[in-house]
Length: 453
Image (cartoon, rainbow, N blue to C red; front, side, top):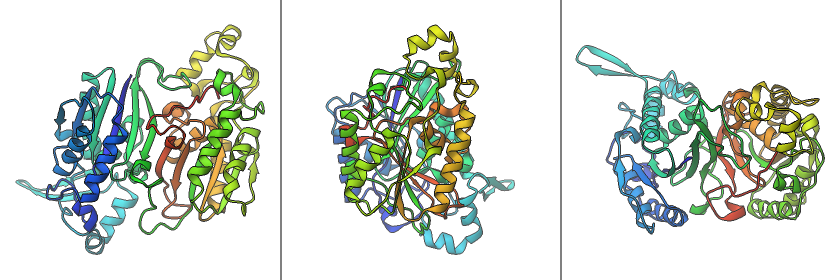
């Protein structure tokens, strides 16, 4: 497995002044940016890195140098142009508000149709049409191709920028360029991406053997900077939903398929829920919704001990996938009774009909219908507590991904993901952070049992 620790540079002078940076190399780290880079280095100090890559632009390069200076045995830093920020030549150096005022239609397209957004640039033959988002996606694909040809195993530090990091996450996860604005990357936010041809999740599931399996383990962790979650974007006017997976059960720990068997939390699951409750206690919650099953319901009730004014709404549509005749069985028992079907579930989950249970399309249909109803009916900030398969279906839905991408997003027991609707419930969502488990272990890695579904 090749594990990528992806970091956005620290706060820069242009970030502070609210200027558009692009590939302009005039912006430097602020004192706060340098301090946050040190916090990243301290957070990653126990990790042994096999290589480190950075954008050559000074705000990213200095961030990477500060991080490496906090490590015991740092690798040599390798700058590469493939990690340069998105190229916005007509706007670089402008105040963001000036760009909005001077190019209102173009800026709207940049926000709402980034894959179609273009700039006309002078050339020797007249004008050329430059598509910044498509170009940065091409750079990201080239970077992954080069990196993965060099590193089949190991842990790699990659330090880049807002735009290139979004493109790196998207191209790794097969998210299309029209969702460019739906991925948040905060200054000094940490994301973890796993690549491998062998099982890479704690569920021990893999993508098809002929493809490189990719798993987004976590996205935009910011607790090390003192900010438990990223702040909503400017002009935010829709709901914020905190998507939580229930705490651990004995069957999770043992690797036994539970599905719709109503297994309660174990003691560790209750402790995970208490830690999630402590993590969220200072967040003002306006609503609370849970699957009607015991394990998410108890997780939600523990979280709500700090929010006693809220009543928990239970929804049957958020129940875990029905594994049918697999429920209550270990993998070895499933393989014995249904030879080959478990491997198909691991490699092509969208093709599997669970014996006397559900298929993923049925899960997609009910989970997404319930999610849409919730988004339309709530306001403010609240929790939605559900299950591994349900949460994965919702996360895929945010990016228009079908059931074949089921294993792309990790969901640990007690993990929290943050989903904003900045343009209202009918607009595109923004995944602000995903699979946050730092409140459980203090590590950037998900160390939960996770177990069978």
